Image 1 (cartoon, rainbow, N blue to C red):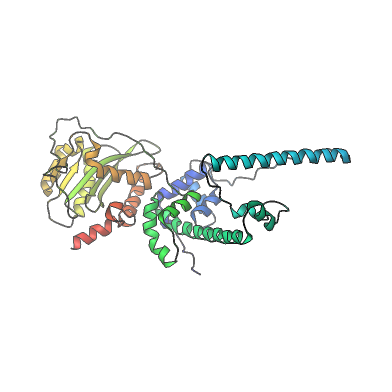
Image 2: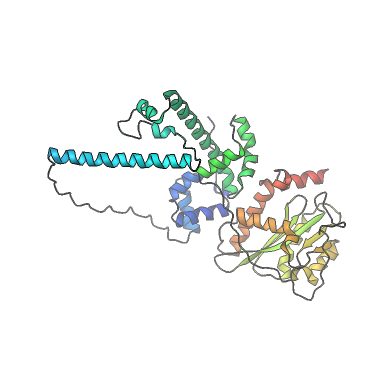
Length: 409
């Protein structure tokens, strides 16, 4: 039997901690239920997170609610035999009407709507209806006992398999809370093969749906681009056409963009520079204003980690920060070729917008308290994205693996 993996506080990202705290404070679950659902180790780990990051007062333990004292029932006069017979006849009539109603509903579902009603073994179980034996229940449902036992065993096997799958998903969701099911299937395919588990993509969707582990997309919009200015614009070198530049390796085309991050106070901003070939985030910076000097820190980080001397095309929108003299001077000193969108059209910088959406939609799920906490959350999220998150466009490889492998060729 495999031993449980012991985790420390460093194994849980700040974004995941804030997400758990928010669910507990909203009343969706208790802190003990959160520990069981997400496999969090420690008797009071979630309670410590609530005291540190929560908005409610968790300093004192909450007392158990006192049950209201119930008034003793007044003694009732026993029924006569004639009254008891009439009461039983009335109950029998109601049960027959209920049975007829359910039969009618099932017939309408089957005949008029084409719905197949599955005969679940749980409904035939002797423990569900008092006094009903399995043999009689099978006879009522029109199936044999052999079919019932075979179906029961199949359901138990599927339940055990679902529990094993959820146990494999939970450690990944600790670090990537909103990773998609298709990417999970790609990551877990090797585990399924070793454990001789036949779990397809659709079945994984069904297991996660029943465990309430599917993620729903969340969309928001906040404009950060000012394209109405006096600075010089540059042509779009990535626009579809005969002269379109298509990267064939890393460090050939970088795409840049600015997005906002809501905090419990005022907005902060995130500047990103992403390699268009490997999808690796090569530069980022969290800042409290839209000053050009702050935005340029992401580009400076990308230039510090650059490993080749080939000319790089820097593609962005026509924001005033990217067109400014300060930013263009950095291009000139390092030999970067500037490319920009044709006005404010997010589809012409789709890759950068997509990376923004991945970070905010899968990792940065909760509002940080301030700029310092936002910086820590972004650093953890970028590291997980580059090193652990498979990318569909990269044939389910991680950006770091593609970037490193291509540079070594």
